Amino acid sequence: MSYPKPFDIATGGATGWRSLKVEGRNTGVAQTFEPVTPSGIYRTPQAGGQVQLRVRAGGNANDTATGTGAREVQIYGIDVNGLEVMDAIPTNGASASIATTQSFIRILSARVSKSGTYATQTTASHLGDIVIESTTGELWASIPLNGFGESISRIGAFTIPIDYEAFLIGVRVNAAAGKTVDAVLFKRENILETAPPYSPMVVLTSLFNITGFEDVLYEAPVYLPPLTDVGIMAIIDVQTARVGCGFGLLMRRVR
Image (cartoon, rainbow, N blue to C red; front, side, top):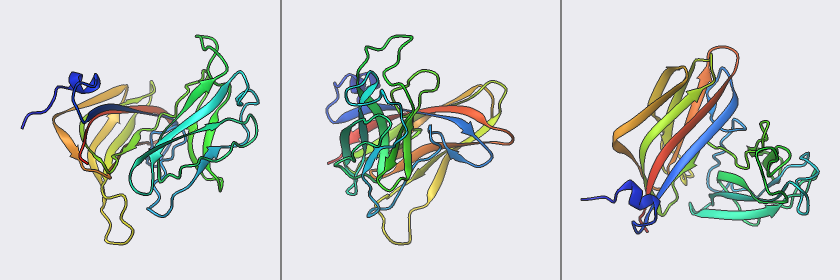
């Protein structure tokens, strides 16, 4: 069996295929393993635990639907049926936003989709941290300012939708200067299981004593079936560390 070239996939020249680069960042990795995400969290409720999401109160007053900062946030994730869903909600300044119409069991990305400012190197598209929570107040993700508005939640994890299979082609983990961290790449299949026995969470690759950055390129891509969580968690022995990560996926539609 032959497969299309990555360039053909990236440019839309291979019907049914997609390429995806997942990037994560955590500025406070500590002494227990935690996801490489801005919030240090990757929520994974079981089917039936779906939630509606909103922007948490306490943000910048100018990140509002008519303001000079972020005017709208787009949330992309997985619903209770394992399908990709997307929703957009207007920001509401220092007050909580309205909730999404869609319900989610995974959040794959949150990003500023509309801004009141034509951004430059000195002026960002949002003016404060934007925190995504459930309607009950549970933290799900954040779009950090970090000195300059990033406009996206860099979540170092992904869930393969029910209508795709994926091939993991490579992984990178990097640590802040002077820090040494360990990291694991994990997967968990069959995310819609509702009763035991459950599919286990399995480490695919372990990376030790990372100083600077470390790349892993797989000679043979790692197969990830539909409805599989995949992501990176990191730990440091003492103090805290800034950690970034990334991994590449080639995805093929199967239904």
